[in-house]
Length: 535
Image (cartoon, rainbow, N blue to C red; front, side, top):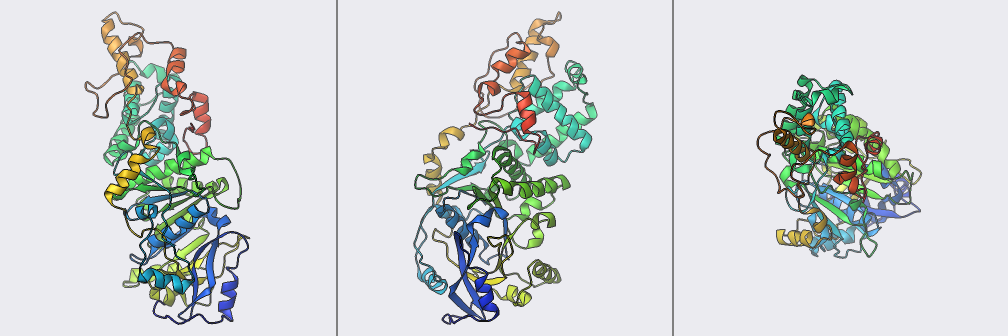
């Protein structure tokens, strides 16, 4: 497909019908120009309506076919149209979207072929990292904010264990024990199966030692997979992803993930929390003239490889429902079979780059991919194995919600840098970000672990006669787990009443960062298991 440099010719027959299918009335994103019989037709643009970007999409193709450049091309135009974008950068090669691209002969040649007026342009960007892993502003969630439902899914607990974890969260909520990180949750579990703590939980259902052991072992394995760094304070507000720049362009949020490519559970945990958190915090808006936010998850197979049934069900439900909140999700991967069928069925917009057919499995995947497209005059098996870099088979949803004709297109060139920025440039961007002061420094405030440790210390100080604090004393490890420096820790003192605990807790005092009451948290968890927070 890429060999012809013939000038555009008038379209007729099936080609004219295909071109007509992309003549939309409203605002659009320009993908490229129609290819027909080896000829590129710049006067027959292939577009996608801006209004259907919340109907989700898939960008697929073999390694080296241009998937990341397509992601970058769409993200640039979304930003230019005032739509914030989130990019999960697994390979570390899309940070260049923040700076102008490099002009050159190949760029000018591609622009001329597709009728593009190319101008080197950088786009407003923020860079993030999961819990301080790698470069970027740390993104953290509290265990309380994450909630028992999602945590049960990522820990792959059964129904009985999930219900027990819900009781643990309920108890912590009612006692003003903030679950900021995993050590807080472990401390509460250990307390509730101790001789001192067991009677308290018995009133609301009890917790068996065996179930507690399963939960603690699952938490240990989860933390060893790198998830421990994701939980803690300050908790990230996902509304930050919805910001626009002073000039009206959408901010591109780039999550730098090259160091977590071998830890898919951490990536999938973050995805579940982020989508659920956004869903709970956004109002129903239906179909808008442009989405509020669009996500791109590169190397999407990492999300689904070895995923539990509960995780797949959660992702499917979230992708299905979050559309009505004005949020679009694009998965970027090698073949459509990397995405579960129930999720794939929710993806209305498709950009399919070249596929290889070197093995019987490749040939099988090729035939399966062809069957996912509407009928077309192209021989798609032949086309998909012959596409050049930066060429793709496209079908999107029209403004009426119907699939457009299948089109083979030569795609436009991104206007930002097609590659990573220097480490020094990235570090400076993070340092100068207005969010750096808000999220960069980890805070280990007085939460469940510290409060339970204080009770134990008070119990020991009370001696054999016991004190009011001793009645609630936990079994606490002799040494505090390693972690960031403590802030705001209080000396052991007489245990306050339940009302004093709740009113005096950091969670209650910081209503701008937390719902703050048991009832509010449990209502907010009812949909996807997360406790909603907004500053």
